[in-house]
Image (cartoon, rainbow, N blue to C red):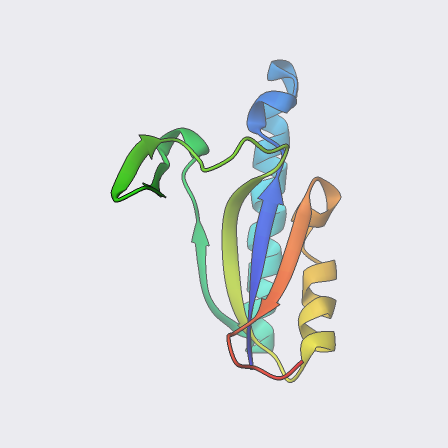
Length: 119
């Protein structure tokens, strides 16, 4: 069964400018090492690192019109930064991989099964 591991992290601006480059470099290296573990275990299917929310475009229905606006749908303390899809036997296995994700140290990893999958 496939599970999406969705990565939510605080905006980059919440990290002091003097520490930003080092912390991002360290997190990216940790994420790459974790991804290699997923690949080595044969559970990795695909991944996507998203551009920042400043590159987002949102569409909303308003009456009979669809409004197109720059930016995310809502202001939040955490932003969707990317995702990985894994193939696991069950939710417990997917949660085990999510617990090892470096994003857990700074934000949230949401684990969601593919549509129609039994829980």
